[in-house]
Amino acid sequence: MEYNNDIQIVLNSLNKDKRELLDKVNEIDKLIKKIKYGNQTLGLSKGSKADKFIDELDEPQQPQAFPLKADLKIQVLKVMDMIGVACKLKDIAEKYHEITRLHVNFRETLRNLNKHELLKLLQPKNSIRGLYWVKTEWLDENNNLKEQHKFDGFELLFNDEMIEFK
Image (tube, rainbow, N blue to C red; front, top):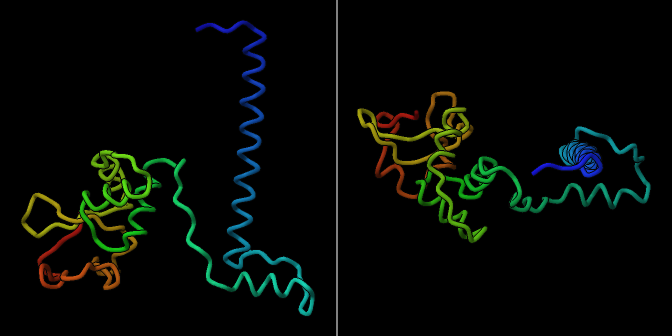
């Protein structure tokens, strides 16, 4: 579809405004994260009315809402964080469906995340097929799954010598 010159100018202007607004939102998000994690001081002195605000910041924060408009890879990583333990592709799909009510095939997304080493596939040694997906950050320096990320009964099925992560 061809646009006349006036429509193209309007579209270009709107796209420029959109980019500028997205940049501002990203800057605000960065500032929020800096304040939230203590990397940015607010310049508030002790004994001021802002003490209540600081005390509120020290309270545990509610987990962030699920990023519905984010890329599917980001959503998968968030779902993995919500599950918190080694899980099968089916578990990821079910949790995602529970949150969004959408059915999505995650196979290629998981493979892509594995290629970029954000996820690893747990598989028995001398086996071609992997069984469970884990986040790379869930592995310790010896490439073993940390205890808090093992599902109930993990030790009954596996020991560290019989599995590998690819």
